[in-house]
Image (cartoon, rainbow over all chains, first blue to last red):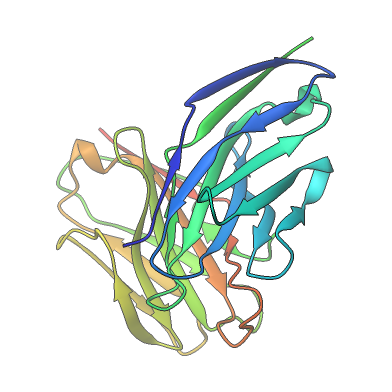
Length: 114
Length: 115
């Protein structure tokens, strides 16, 4: 079965410092992986996706993630945090060969301090 | 704006009642998915429809049902509501024919409060 584990429930950074949100996945075949962001009282927005092309994936708002098969990881990074990055971030795996349903991690709440 | 619309935005109802949530997918998307986001369960998949047919079921209660109509919009029906059904319900759509994407586009959600 597919699953993702987000290793931190909360991450706090200062504005202008790097962001690292960690995600490990479990999959019996090559997965499709996503990061979604949810701002307070808002819907879900796709940040980036990995679908077996380049292992380093660039997304919106300066975010990127690297697919590392040997480590079964898909960590999300950003070189410099902005106040507007404060939100809940979800690592997601798609059940590609089954139903296409998305399986969400438990989320990481990112706080950005001035 | 994802192109997926959901109505209503907010719904407040009493225990034991029945409600219907509506979703209109992006133009051309044949698949519709329903997800529930609650504090204790997180975000979980409920059900998927593809071109009018049920394709997959997740952790959907028997009190809940859904359908997708010929114009591809979908409705999620929740009956005999309990306090624990209070949650944010998301609809998403995708075009499974786009095999390079596997991306789902989410609507803004319907917040259901059961009192």
